[in-house]
Amino acid sequence: MGARLRVVLDQLTHVVDADQASASTDLAAALVATAPSGCTVEAIVPSGADVPVPGISDVRRLSLARRELAASWQMGIVPGVGGGLIHSATLMAPLVRHDRVHDHDQTTVTLWGLQAWEAPESLSKTTVAWQRGMLKRAAKHADAVVVPSHAIAERLAEIAKLRNRIRVIPGAVPSGFVVPLDASARRASLSLPSGYVVLTGSADTLDLGFRAALASGKHAVVLDAPEGSEPKLAEIAAAAGLPESRAHIRGLLSADDRAAVFGAASAMIATGTCGAWPWRVVEAMTLGVPVIAVESGVHHDVIADGGAVVAPADLSDAVVDAVGAGARRLSVLAADRSRSFSWLGAAERVWGLHADL
Image (cartoon, rainbow, N blue to C red; front, side):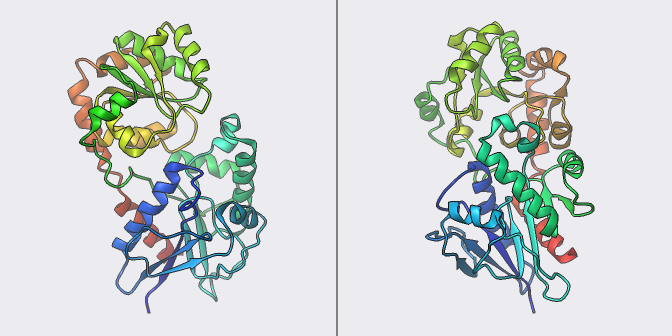
């Protein structure tokens, strides 16, 4: 008799994190594609949600909407969910006492980043409280907590008493992540210049990227800027010597828009050092964009030899090389490294995780 793996798809009607929402559906599709013989994949979804993943054998549609479900599960109230093998690509899961040995019930969750503990100011107070509360429930009831890198695993072991329940399964880029045919038009609609580098990071670290952009002679395009932060980031750019006309601050973009932005980027500069999966770094590598990142455990894990991971003091020199003599070499290294990350590979490891449990 085969196993039924039940995946939580909580953001189908209400997206709270676009990267994690995309990861959840991409992983679900990959779990269907890699299911061992006789095994099936089912979905657990909030009220009113339709499942856009072909091959899902059954859907448990709950009576609560996503927001109410998040509050209910945080308190350990999980009516109508049922048992079995449950996997969530986020912290959103029915974390309650269950019997893995006799009833063969399992619940595993995924933690993509530690911002709620390392940089709580970057999130809303509600989000911080919810993530911390759900991790406490996971420490009590989860059979495993999946994280995307070994550096995050080491830090998580210091934060929560999970002992040997931490597993490392990296993420990947959104399905079909390629430079779109209308990339030029998308860049024009975003009012982007020619000749730029892409920056990611927080207000505390982006000055390094602005200085590097200035040294390279390029414009700077900041992705994922928090809503309302443009004036502050423009001031940081000006203080770093980069004129406001050369600092282009953009918020959350769609996957196609991000691919269009990367399609014309001379380099990608990751200045953040918080313990979180670097979604944009992996996207840049996938499209062969030279990647330069400030030293951190996560960047060493993810980029490895696929780019330049340097000390803050060396960032500008590394970017100058990346947009000049080292451009071709770093582009090839990035594309090669990106092949290490796929949702099919992640799905195989999720199946293996539940088999081991």
